Image (cartoon, rainbow, N blue to C red):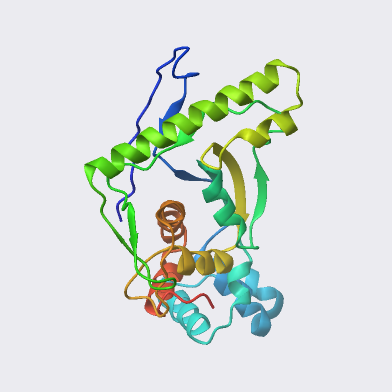
Length: 254
């Protein structure tokens, strides 16, 4: 998987062009806490037959892998829910809102009611597909030209400067933060704590990554896919047997 880490900064400041702004193309999802393991899935499943002894059982990888594969294949999903993964996500607001479409997360987000937002805005890097072709439901995204990229960069920069100038003007005039923020675009960066369990995360990954080998091929927007790819790397590291079974079963959440 390739995750874009290009950063473009723009700090021009003048009476003509408006306030200083920073343009970024990085989107990050950092694992900050977890209670996730393959053994935990097995213990949760085994309680139905082993009772209170399930929590004390120690099982080898072959047994764990076999039971997890059975649970995944048979769509017995609840044993995958007794864990948690917490991520610190730094992304433009429109990407955070894509996450919120999945009603599975526990969220705490940076609040523009309680703090001044930074002058940091999103711009796609040069690897981003820029043009959309096809009918609704059958889109394809293709590369843009250098002129396309320059147009997008120039247009967004001008809009961001104007929006941030008005935001600062409202704050300087004493307007409440909760009202001043309404002039800012959804490309403004935000930070969120997001927590879910492995079953919910697998559902999220199935919908927010593009994999041709998946049972149900999804076509997410690239920015939310960057979040999903980073989360999947951590999921695979913490729960390698569960992740392998997820892959083997066509990336369908149990």
